[in-house]
Image (cartoon, rainbow, N blue to C red; front, side, top):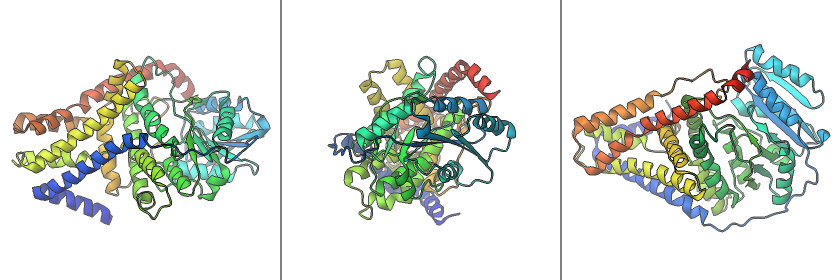
Length: 485
C-alpha cells in the first residue's frame, strides 16, 4: 500500500474515533466544496483575452487516428466510411486505425479487410501487448503519421462524423489561430429516449468547456479533437499515466503555452453508454482520471511553479473538478457516529452539511444549465436524476484516486450485450444504510435527517436513469445488432 493511502486511511479512521478530528476534516471538506461551487460562476464572469490569427494553415493536412479495442467491426467500419466520405481533398488527409490488444480475430480482421480495400487512404495497424491503453495505441498511430501532416485528429470508433467535419475543423483552426480545437461530444437517437442523460453529459461542454474557451485552455475529451502535430510531438505525445489521457494532454499543452479552443458545433455523433453500469464505469474513469491529473500536475496548476496565468489555472481546475466529490468521507463518518451514539455532536452536523452541499452543487449546476438552455422541465428533471444516480460513483472515484488505488482503463461496451444488468451495489448500500439510520437511529438534528433523506435519492434516480437507457438500448437495438453481426 502506498504511503498516501496509509495516510488517508489513517486520517479517516482517526476522524471516526475522535470526533474532534472528524469535525476538522468535515470543515475542510465544506471549505473545499464552497470554494469549488463559487469558482465556476466566478470564472464565467472573467473577461476573455482571446488572441486570433496566430497561425494560418491555408490547407491543413490531417492524420485521423481511430483507436479501437474489441469493438464491433461494423461499428468501426461505419465510422471509417464516414471519414472516407469527407468533402476534403482525399490527398490532404489520411486515416490510421490502431487496433490494440484485441484477442478475437473476428473483431479486428473484418476491419483490416475493409481498410485493405482502400489502399493509400487507410492504414490499419494491429498490435498486442500495447501498454498505456488508449494512450499507448494513439502513440503508435502517431509514430505512423505521414510526414507532411500538420494536424492529428482523434475520432472514437463509434462516432459517425458529418461530411463537412474536416472542413469545419480547418475553418476553426484558421478563425481562432488555436493550436488545438475540441468539438463537443454528441449522441444519436437521444431526442425521444434519453434526453435527460444526453443533457447531463452535455452540461460539461455547455458550462466547463465553454468557460475554458474564454481562456484558450480547453482540455481535450478524447474524440473530435484536432491537434497541431508540432504541439503534440513537442509535449511528448499521449501519456498513459492517468485514465483520462485526453485531459492530461490538454494540461500539458496549456502548460507548454499552446492555445486550445472549444468549437461549440456538433460535427459527429456516437453512442451513449448502453446501460447504467456502463455509464457508471465511464463516469468513474472520467472522475478518477481527472483527480489523478490534479495530483500529477497540481504543482504546476495551483502554485507559482507553473507558468499559467490565473485565468488558465482557474478554468483548468473547473474542468478537472467537474465531477469531483468528497461526499464519501462525510457519509462514512456520519454513519459511524450515528451507529456509535454520537449523532448529536457538532462533527455529525458538519458531516450532514457536507452531504447536503454536495446535493446542492448537483442541483444548482444541472438546473441552472437547463434553465439557461431553455430545456423542458421533464428533461431537466431527468438530467438531474442522471447526475444524482452517478453521484456515488463520482464520490468513490474521487476517494479511490486520492487514496492511490490502482485504476484501470475500461473501454465502454458498444455491443449492447454486456452490462445490461442495472444497479450497482453502491446504490443499494447507500440507500439501505441511510434508511436504517433514519428508522433505527432516530436522529434528532434536522440537518442530519435531511442529509439521510438526500442519501436515499441515488437509488430512485438510478432506477429512472436505467429506464431511460433501457429505452435507448431498445431504440438502437437493430443498428447495434447489425453492427455486432
